[in-house]
Image 1 (cartoon, rainbow, N blue to C red):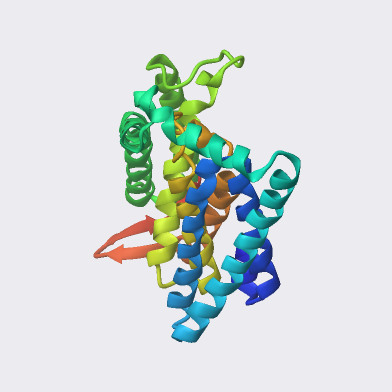
Image 2: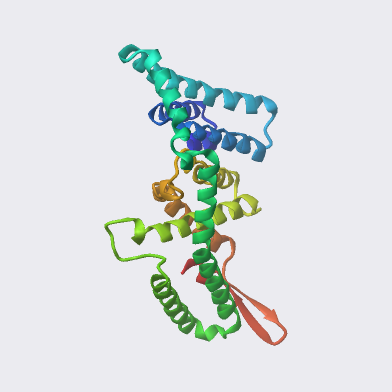
Length: 275
């Protein structure tokens, strides 16, 4: 709803997004962090060089929906259980940190950073492989395109086998071990593509806004839990399509072309990245 509202400048979608986020807070109190999505609204105004009036107007529509969402659920709780019971529940929730030291904000952020660092080595290996692939496609003669593609694909399979040997993933599908490492890499890949799309001059306003939303969602979702990146695995329905779209956009922006360097011809292509 938020993206539809910002893309089409339609206030009803912004109100609907606010209602959903407001109701989500009442489902799980730490979801209050999702209010940070208002940054996407302000970013959209910034990208479009909007006047301050539009900042206030769009913020107001989102805030209206947010308060409506909270108000509807709070009214239902008050009628069924009483407002005092709800307030007492919040007080008990806020007191949990005295019994669970790993549930503090510092601990959540620290564990999240540790998870990114630990899984970042897999992303670095993949990044180095892509760079070597781009160099290989550029240096070797163009007539060897099929050989280069097959050779690079085989190298990718070897890298996957090495990942398996290093414990990056397992074949036990009764737990998270089979998908956690790949999910972490996908999350970091989505963040990298989102940053590229925001900074690139060859992407339009809507793509920049969508990228900002993706970054904010990935950033705030783990807050309120001590589950590191596990909460973000639930966002694969957003992350994977965004990655595919970003790669397609990159292929469109940077088409294959030959560059002459003296008597040598170099093929510049992002095909290794796509593979």
